[in-house]
Length: 341
Image 1: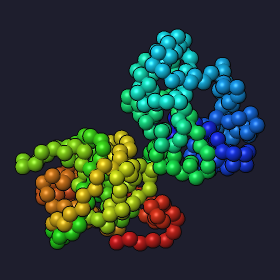
Image 2: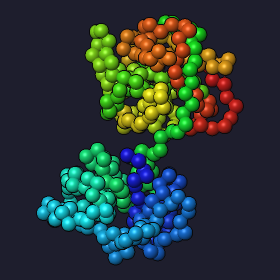
Image 3: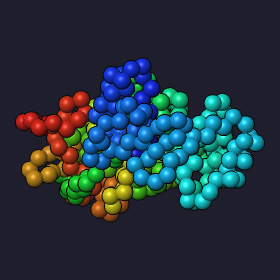
């Protein structure tokens, strides 16, 4: 659910408030706006301004697009039947919004582009995800600059690009007592090669595979990653890090495969329990990188030979993971002198 498919329609009282909404949205990475003629600025590079006037939307190029208010099933059926091919259909829902939008998405196919209007930020995720694919563009009414922050938390931004994957040999692997380990249950089904990036220092995060493959005595749980000890960093979908102990339901975390594919998934549940741990210690150009993980057959660390249970992993095994800038402030990379051990 990318913010690239969201257009901000400032609806605050007064030009100053609407300008403040647009400025906040630009800071948060939104680039498409629906503006009144009096609010149109000189668009900056990469920004798309759609002019709204007299019930019509005027994109930078192409024909004007009328906004259709749909309140009944029959009116929607007729609108979809008459929609010309290769055009854009913009719909506003004064009453029911979810099921009629799903009907519109189902009828769209590849015949036309579908734009819809959300009355507030909370309606945006449903519009982006209707029947999995959602509307091509969601225009959202924003009445205060602070509402942009709410919207940012509800939609996905760009995933971190150019992750630097590395192969590190383990210097040691062995028992590390009992500690609080964190299981991350997601609202998505993961493949056996997908996993999360976790570690004791931000400079290198180990790839912990999902539990999409069970063990001899446990069934697969493809929504789960047994991520590690509570103090560990985990990479989020926006490229920041967070401690595992701080994760909450609804947070967006990054799941990735060692070949570089990545996507965002939402946390559905966190489980913190005291369990026996193992300490994996790898070396990266003379620096030590560590991971505390639960000792169990169902917990697998990704290596050059594939995911290996923590009960079987040994010194000399080459593990896979991602190098990141080592210094962090509230999860965001910063430039400073730092040493983490």
